[in-house]
Image (tube, rainbow, N blue to C red; front, side, top):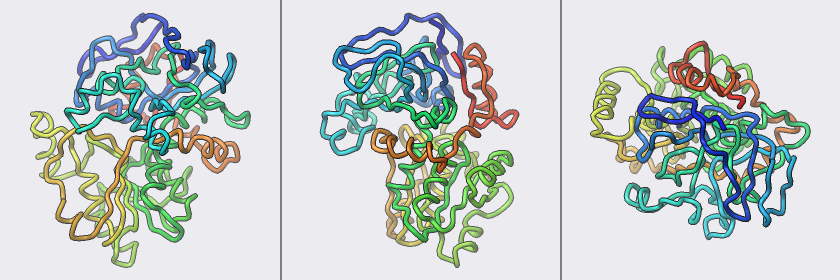
Length: 389
């Protein structure tokens, strides 16, 4: 089958790879209908995530049709239209039992790598390096889905394929940031990043009762999309002092909840950005953290900061003093999609969450390398590039 493979830093290629097959009784094989780029994929392309190997199939957000079912799968059958959570959960370990699905104890088949990096190993994820299990990714014609009764969800008839695609990762990740960040009725919420996850975090905050939601970015097309499709306020950090503007909009206090949805290659201006970029390129720090720094500095005293953007290792000049002396709560996680998907698909079927606008560029899988170039370089207003195998 055809697949989009990592061939080295900033190099992708379409290759022929072996078809996946049932390996365990709880597996299914999904014929991919749509698969989509994610900002965290750019960290793979940039060489910031360890343990990538030439020929690895990338991609972790997808939906499609089940074409083969393992003998112990009970919730699915051939022909089902499903969306698959990007993180793989076994459903039986302590973490899965406690709805912490991305921390599954049993699905990362190479735990030693992340144990050395982070002190313990999270769960496995499709197409995201051998440090995260080495699973074949979704930018392919077919994907093997382990523990399918836990990670594959039947798409309601009222939700079309393209909309359902974003329930694989973007929608539950955004919802988790608002939920675990503690958003409640009457809150003011600031979200750094107007990509797919940032927009979904903003929409989640609104549905959880936030009175004011402000999304921060610099790209006019993303800010316009956020205003028109999500209905949040926007703030262009290239033309204003973000901290001062947020204080102005919140009576001098700052936001109650700050959600960082940018990750380890965040952009900013001034000497701080040059400092971080040079150190990152020299691998003197892994992560470029201006967005999470700004979120901590902007948050009101006693507020909450949630990190949704992907980070891999060490970040310099982290404002620990501000975190401690302001009495902030700082949390972060990879998405616990299995916790949220039934509820989110129901909300999507009722029209409470709209996602299809995120698919700004839909193209064939053969155009995958070009799609990633557009996505990485923010060309032609590309928010997400979607591939049809």
